[in-house]
Image 1 (cartoon, helix red, strand yellow):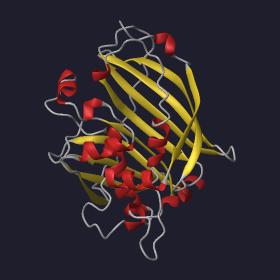
Image 2 (spheres, rainbow, N blue to C red; image 1 turned 180 degrees about the vertical axis):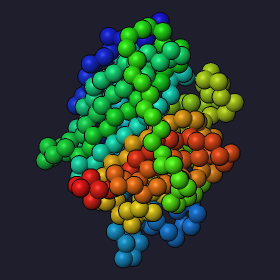
Image 3 (tube, helix red, strand yellow; image 1 turned 30 degrees about the vertical axis):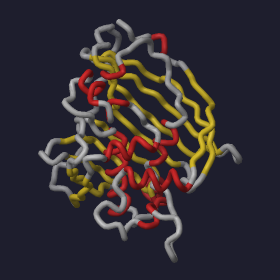
Length: 287
């Protein structure tokens, strides 16, 4: 077994991460902003439109943490069999269009899931100038073939989707070259661009980044439930259940509940690709 279970508790950082208004624009395009109509979402896709102030999509929080490049040494695992399983973020303050933070991370759990291991990392990003906490994230990765080491298994969370028709169904298209565009925001994993590497993971073609699907989902939820105002989105969590192929059209089913917006994302065949989603606005968070 290659997984180093001694990585539990291993810390990394702080690492400084900077982003600019250009990074904000590129990310917005990478998660589909302006794809249906180039004249819409100009506050996210342009910096010089008359009467429009540029803004940053809240889901960029997970990219900031990713771009710190903090990778706990888990041993010589097969990276082609490592897949994003869960992702959550909390914004303690709205994200500025340009900024500089210090990111720190810690491995908080390594669980035996039988067919593989689930490794969970918690991270935080503080403003490099003020020292204020800006972002908290939790991310889990499933590493195939690394299970069977025993230990207590946490029971899977019960499905939490409401037992009624969705209050709204939103669409989020992807382009055949979506992964090639999204990777320019920092995630250069060849699973999303190199056919030979993707084949090692059992895929006929490179797949879309899970965080691209996550960002596209967050973007349409922002418009539908936060009035397109990034300052209103406080947090978002979800579980990845199935890979997405670039070019697939996605649909997001959403329910307004007292605790926030429950959601899940489906591919063109009606299969769930993101499940057990919960998005909270600042008003809901404060209640």
